[in-house]
Length: 124
Ligand code: HEM
Image (cartoon, rainbow, N blue to C red; front, top):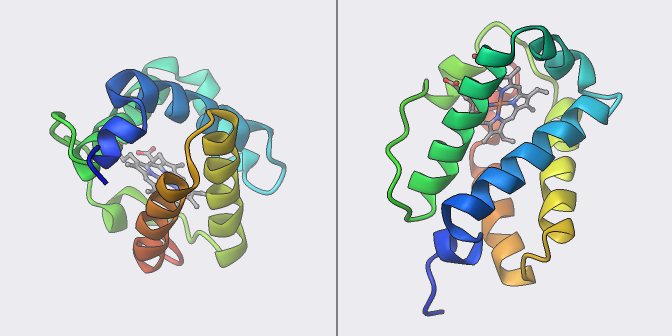
């Protein structure tokens, strides 16, 4: 594999588009929408969370960005996210990757990263 994960996700532009569409999908997914829809009332906060998510996936995939958000435990602290909610968020991300025509090896790479973060996100 010669291209980095960052490159295979379409670089910064690609990751921005994926994060936008994944967050839209969370807003429409009845299993998790209540977690995300309130951010429509605070667009600056929504933009910051999206920016942090772009930085997170850029840095984690070999891109140039420096992540400036909270660590995964603290970012989700006090939310008591369930395993079911976690699975729905991962589904939304994977469907977004398919919609963006991201190849299957790259889908697997992202899935593994999301899976490896699971216990930092559930039940915090
Ligand atoms: C699947 C793995 C997940 C990853 C990699 C992830 C990643 C992130 C990142 C990078 C942020 C930004 C943190 C910051 O701004 O400091 C964030 C925030 C957030 N995440 Fe997640 N997340 C995941 C799963 C979930 C799930 C399952 C939910 C709820 C169902 C969720 C709900 C939220 C919310 C509501 C915020 C905004 C928190 C705030 O107001 O600062 N996340 N997440």
